[in-house]
Length: 420
Image (cartoon, rainbow, N blue to C red; front, side, top):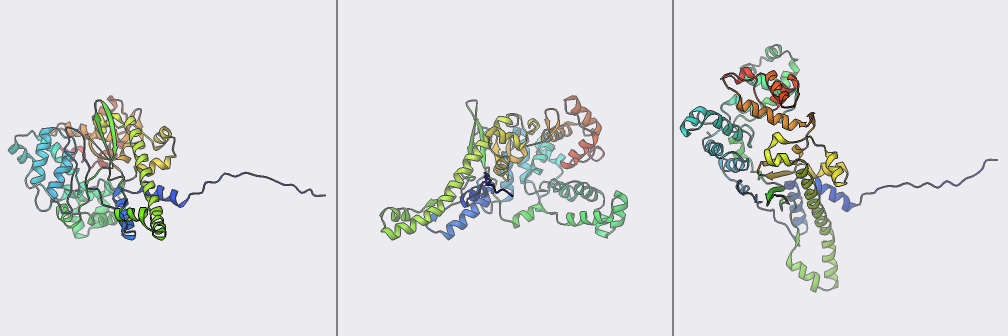
């Protein structure tokens, strides 16, 4: 006879409430997107007031206040504001500010850099360092010396292997592109014609005159979400109002909530309840950003002291473990967020970097490679193997192929093309 039994099981299940989902979304939003969402909310709920935060100040003696960018501020002023945030040596900053004023209508240098260096009584190395700083600013391609360098500067965010093919076409085959000789290009580069066609399509989307393009677009303010500065030997971390803005009930409706009749109070209370979700979500965002930034500063103190060459290997999981939160929370917190310090502005995501050699992060290796190239003898530039040997002597053992990959990612030409 078949027996009947009663089975009892327990299952733990997490259900996200609407308010929790809102908090997760608010945490992940870039600050500009959050401001746009709150503006839309204030339009739908006119009894609430929201104003975009105007600016944030860097509390440090040797960096100017952060940009208070007007909606149509001249490009040269925006460039100068960004340059002042980079922590450049005073002589280099002076040259870089001069270069920002000396661009032509396309955004190119109006004169050769060596001529400018001579006029300012600066060394060629200082002038080149100033030019590199200017060329790292937005819009991509600004400060180029010619069309080729303008297009190459815009390849920094293009992924391999397309970046390498595009760079080769820009350097050596622009005339072939103009004549439609794609088969010749493919043969020269030993790649399929289809790859050349895709590379050319991407090249045609680049901007040959970045200054003109920037003047046509609305300005995106350069604002940090988190500020880091040192006070009396201790690191101070501050989440800016830009990252955690305020949503407020208008005073007239606050009075109605206190003094109105029952129906009015019920109506206003319902509106406040909806806004309270947003207010709580913004406060949770602020607290999470604060905790994540504090953990990043503890883990990456070398960066704040010495710059990108001191970025240590770091995973999202490391910060998550430090804070006792899920890795996805850390990922949401840093996505699209900007941190400002004496080193300038940096994406918080860049402070996470894989280890490529014992104690060396990929970001640190790239930064050290750029420093080596900057300091090399321009008449006898270093080969990729020579750079690999130098890094190996410092404890960062990388293959020649890895050096070439990082060099191309930084848009640094090979030794033959760097020779002057």
